[in-house]
Length: 173
Image 1 (cartoon, rainbow, N blue to C red):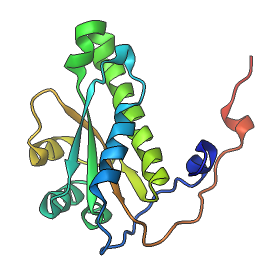
Image 2 (image 1 turned 30 degrees about the vertical axis):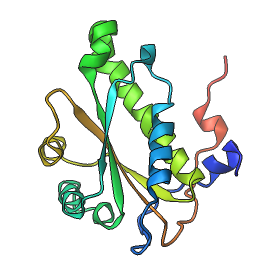
Image 3 (image 1 turned 120 degrees about the vertical axis):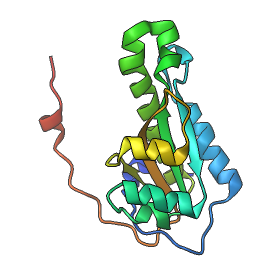
């Protein structure tokens, strides 16, 4: 098993997946468990995760995500949805506006790292029509889809993208 630093270094946005390689149920369950292990405000886990395995639903999501076809080609798409009302019960308006968003995106980031640790790849998609995705997924009122994670076994690994230098992103006081 890789250590944490190697897992992070090997996380890349994967857009091509092996069509003949389904995701094992145990691995998918482990990935979801790691998403749920992410820290959250007040331990409320103010999010829901929609697991999309159905090919026609993934194709519909690809369509509302500006024809990003890799969403349909990957065997699974995880849709991370904020649940602002859950956070608002404890933290009021700030919880609804901010903490639910933070909880959801932290859980999605944990899932991405778990995907790498499980020997797979993923891509985070934020560019999609929120209302149309909500309709496709038949989400209950109040849930806000924030991120789609397509995942599967990579058909190719992209080259690492350039990162800003540490001195360009840090401020020391």
